[in-house]
Length: 353
Ligand code: DOR
Ligand code: ZN
Image 1 (cartoon, helix red, strand yellow):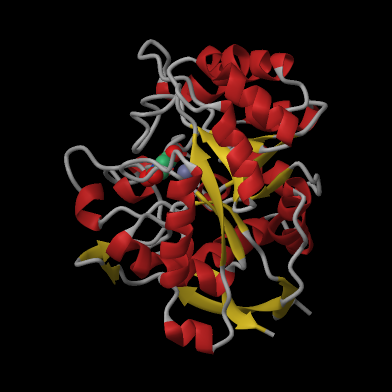
Image 2 (cartoon, rainbow, N blue to C red):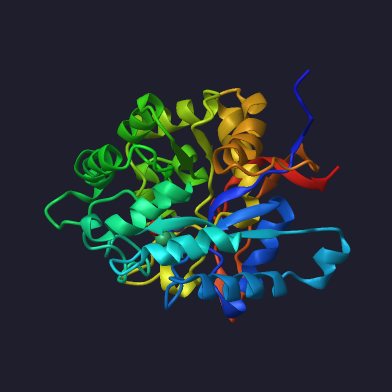
């Protein structure tokens, strides 16, 4: 008999964009329903570069959790990050560690993606901050793409490994690194075979789609994110990594909401809004290779283990109920189109058990 229900430890999202203001209020409930905690990205405008900014942002996130959800027993803990710049001081890293609210520092190579203008232009300028992170066991989350115009957009992650990541790890062998939203066979193989404290997150879109999804019958902006979807051979490698039972790979949705109008335009923003059906999408990917029994560890165990945080104890339930992601979601005066819009889903998140 095929499995009809599936109970697992409540997961966390180890890479999430919550934005701010009205958009924060609109999108937070989707994540808080499914996930107990999330690593919250700092690429606001202006970016979250200090412990002071991170503390204030964490308060705004907590205040944005709707009363109805709190009354239903939903709790949500934002795990904050600092945005690394050429100017980040070692003292700020120390303050971040001492604060207890900042769990990681985020490296955006300048110009790599949304709101990365203030990102790092040359990692050599960050030596003091990186030393302080290594010393304090503070995690460095990496958007791993080179940004040179002469490198093909589909090669940017693989080139980043050779030109930036390997030299960085050579200089800071004890630095705890999360190679975020990996998209290539090269990244999966590098992380799998590397010794030392490195892990990677994988998004639902990179497990479910290859780059054909961007051009299926016309241009499809809602499948556009950075790093961009790659060839099928890469998707297969990521699926094997996610479902292979290695603690080096864990869940990070990279849910990145942009208003429909900002996606469906001549120069559309990068980002897939996966929060509304995040677990269902991961379940779909794992079920496609008959590996649902591996989902719990990927979604709920390996992330907290890497970050040195306790695993969640609550349980949640998924049921085999066919559903369709059928309507855009009203948010902040506009609409958001969820990842997988128009597609059938086999699983449904039911909430806590
Ligand atoms: O697609 C993306 N969207 N990739 C990123 O790295 C940033 C994100 C965003 O903030 O919209
Ligand atoms: Zn992201």
